Length: 164
Image 1 (tube, rainbow, N blue to C red):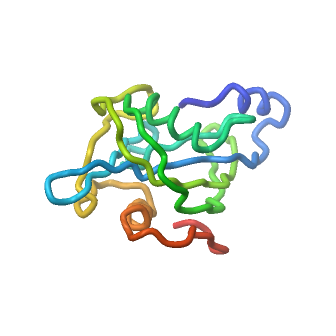
Image 2 (cartoon, rainbow, N blue to C red):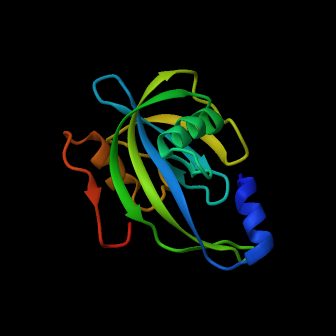
């Protein structure tokens, strides 16, 4: 499932022990007919609709990560406009026993070019959806994150609570 090589190398040393990783996601928007549309991918591991996202490689800037992930996952070119949130995600345990927790960077991005389509094995479908008509099943917190991305610009969202 798209495991970066540096994580695979770490796993050889730490086994299934928890890893603290940086992640990134984007509310990618384009103009729709009367209402903005958001780019979503349907995850192959859970079947849920979610934002384009990924793991930040060592030395990589999170904005570079999300631009790369949009191209890899959905075959679109995006431009990052601003940061929206910084969250400590809930711990994750995978079926193989691996455990990790993410420091999640959220960005607002605009579609620049490319026809959205499945780009790798991490998703089964890719599509544009009106921001007021998100598909189901969807990843927990998706609606809230799209709302943050479509709200008038405000301060960056920091939270001491766990992400939804």
